[in-house]
Image 1 (spheres, rainbow, N blue to C red):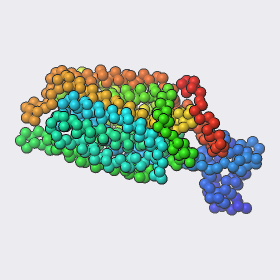
Image 2: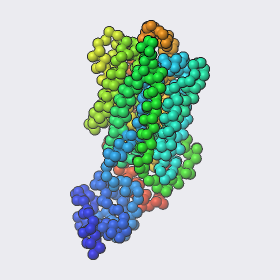
Image 3: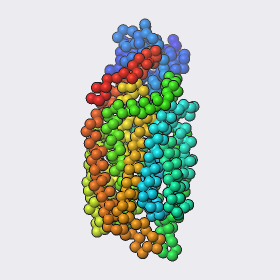
Image 4: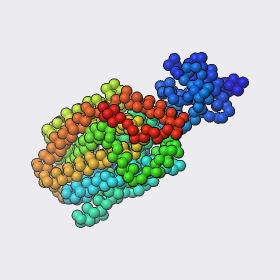
Length: 574
């Protein structure tokens, strides 16, 4: 009578496909028990999604039905947060937008540093190119320590607010303050100026890692499966690139907003001061809003106990163990090379347009087109991945980038404007591949690693990827500054009658950096993709087996540690 009464008060069960393990003759048996449990115990026992494997969900049962909750001769399966998570609906747009918002402040700050910071130090702060290279190198090299450290700390951290979000929330205010201080100098003597900028830039980079590493590691917790992880990253990358369009355009306007009353030349010092106030305030809110409203996956008591028992040696072993994955090693090489190439182009594009093309007044529109095309093609490439797969999408997109970089080497002040805009559009469309595809591959590797090693190490994997990004930035920023200094670059004097000219050797150095050097790096990023072996089918197999394993461990927790660390290395590297 209780199931009959409950059936009148509760929503009906969904129609089951023919492939469902619940066979027709036992359907009423399961329906009654599910409704009974919901009515008496208040437990939410919704039917599992058909595509999720159900072998091992519950044991026992009647006939060949595969068993049921409390079935004959079976063991009652406990409803865990894991199962509830696997049964939930697809990611909501609210979650996608909140997650995408969390990285906007960090992305915007790095974008402006990539496009403008070297130029600011050279031409506004008037720091020697050798010192500029050292500043940019120090700011990134310190991340070798801070990035993996923050990844492991966030992996092992536990609070009622989650393990990732507290870091994002706490670092938001000091991150914005240090961003402002890094762009406003109060010294003119070279050594004092170098010391001040180095300290501020190192601290700002470290606070950026406190936001970016936990933020990146949130993606696997928020998504459920290959398609959801890819979609979540796609939304995030699109939001970041679209935000980059606005940031780069507004920055270009603000730095030329003020003019010297005597010479009518732009007063860049006042312009940069205004821009840092505006963006320092804007960057503050994104991580705070995202971390406050996002909800992390609840971790089991066993997961938290395992983390609290891990020491420094265990953390180091975890970081080293990430290199056991061949696919991850291939992705690391690809990401390091492509991001270094992107950083070289970003870092020197303004100087190339100003001195090699003599089109400084066009930079505002060229950079806007690059960012707009990158945002548009982030959507296009995400659709291409569904047909061609991630690695072939990467190869196609970066091959187009090589053609544009070849053109960069031959452009000069006589080049028609329409050719410049074509090159900028194709460059933007191609650059979005380098930013999008590697990040969408990482959740797949994390699932593979969990399947093989029985542990999830999102923080370790994402911290190393962020570290590679920093190494690429350090290499690009420092080397390009030193190359410019060695080639005879001259900082414009305040009353220079011809401030837009440089020695031919400096102009040629800019072309080589954005041409042959960047092309070589892009080619090196493509080669590892031919050895990358994770595709959609294989990832879904891992995820399917992970679901079966976790559900089985839920029913038999005493066997949870039987196979930890035991895996077939040939299967992983095949």
